[in-house]
Image 1 (cartoon, rainbow, N blue to C red):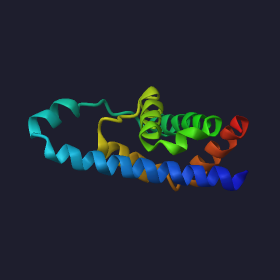
Image 2 (cartoon, rainbow, N blue to C red; image 1 turned 30 degrees about the vertical axis):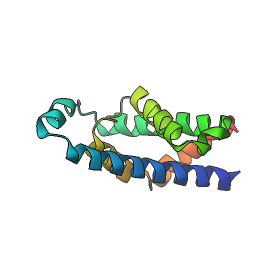
Image 3 (cartoon, rainbow, N blue to C red; image 1 turned 180 degrees about the horizontal axis):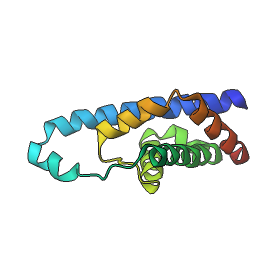
Image 4 (tube, helix red, strand yellow; image 1 turned 60 degrees about the horizontal axis):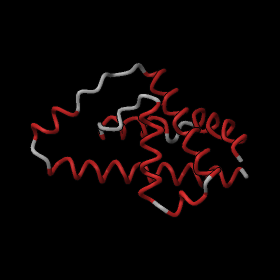
Length: 123
């Protein structure tokens, strides 16, 4: 079971990083005035950001564990992941901030252990 959770977490991280990198490429093609209008997102403090990331990751991982068909549809997975991030107040519209958040927590053993512990009930 631990291997399954680790595989899912790694898959989520890779999928999220790819999604945000693709969005970043799309944003560069838009005129600058469109970007500046949509990028005004209030900054949260680090503790709230960390908690939001953990809670969103737990929620999303549970969704995937409960509905394995999500893994078959990459678009649906991205949509559900964004919904979870947005629900917990993460700035999904700001790719740079989201990549920064992912960089901070994707290899944080404390964060990963919390996510693993809290997704056990979903299996």
